[in-house]
Amino acid sequence: MASNLRFQDKVAIVTGGCKGIGRGCVDVFVENGAKVAVFDIDDAVGQTMKPEGPGEVFYIHCDMTKEDQIKAAVEATIVKFQKIDCLVNNAGWHPPARTIDGFSAEEFRKLLDLNLIGYFLACKFALPHIRKTKGSVVNISSGAFTVGQPDAVTYVATKGGIVGMTRALATDEGRHGVRVNSISPGCVWTPLFEEWAKTAEKGQMEQIKDISILGRFADPREIGMACLFLAADATFTTGEDLSCTAGIERGYGIKMK
Ligand code: NAD
Image (cartoon, rainbow, N blue to C red; front, side):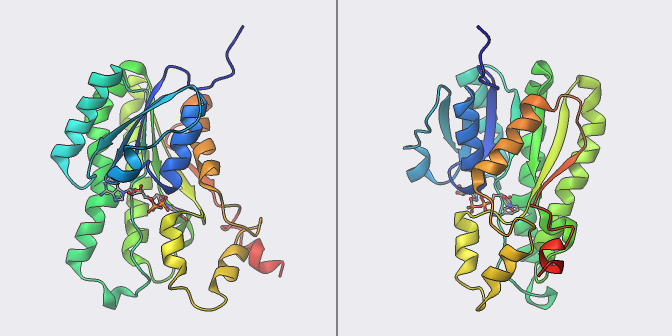
C-alpha cells in the first residue's frame, strides 16, 4: 500500500529549528516521515526535542554566524543520515523598530552575517550533497521585503537579499536538477514576534492582524506546510518566492475596514 507520508526516509536540515517557524517546519517534516537535522544554538530545547511522528530529529549545536560550525554541522548530518534532500534556511532575527539614523554599519553587518551570509554558507556546504539527491533548498525570506516594512531598513534589506540569492542559485543549480525557492511569511506568532509585541504601541497589534485578509496571525506549522509543499510536491517550481502572508500585498485587510 502506498504511504501517505510525503517526505518518508528523506533527510532535511532546518536551521533555527528549535522554536518559531523553524520548529513548525521540523514538526511537519517529522510527521511526514523525514529525518531532520536541526541546526540551532538553543541547546536546552534542542537536546529535549521530541516531535511526534514517524520521522526523527537530530539536534546539532550550530551558530549560523560561524562558518566553521556550519561546515561541521553539514558534515555531522552526512555522518548521521548519509544524505541531504532538503535544506530549510530559516535562522534569522528582526531588530527592534528604528529608522536608519538609529542603525550603525556594524549592527547591519552583524545582521547580514545571520540573515544572509548564514543562508549562503549553509547552501555552499549542503549543495554538493543536495545535488546527489536532486533535492531542493527553501529559504525563509519575509513579506516585509515585498511590502517594505517601516522602521526596519536593515532587516528588509537582508530579506530582499535572500530572494535575490534564491533566484540566482536556482538558475545555477537547475543543471544539477536542484530546485531553490523561498517563502515570504507574513505575521507568524512566534517567540520573536511575541518579544517584539512587548514593545508595540497601543492598538498596534490589532492593526497588524488587520493588514492580512484573514485578519489573524499564522501558526508556525502553516509555514511548515508551505515548506513541505515546496520540498515534496512542487517539482516544477524553482527560483520562486511563495507568499504566505494571507494577502498583505493586496492591502484589502485595510481597504475593507
Ligand atoms: P524565533 O526567534 O521565534 O526563532 C528563531 C530560531 O532561530 C530559534 O530557535 C533560535 O534559537 C534560532 N537562532 C537564533 N539565532 C541563531 C543562530 N545564530 N544560529 C542558529 N540558530 C539561531 O524567530 P521566527 O519568528 O520563527 O523567525 C524565523 C525566520 O522567519 C527568520 O528568518 C525571520 O526573519 C523569518 N520571518 C518571521 C516572521 C514572523 O512573523 N515571525 C515573518 C516573516 C519572516
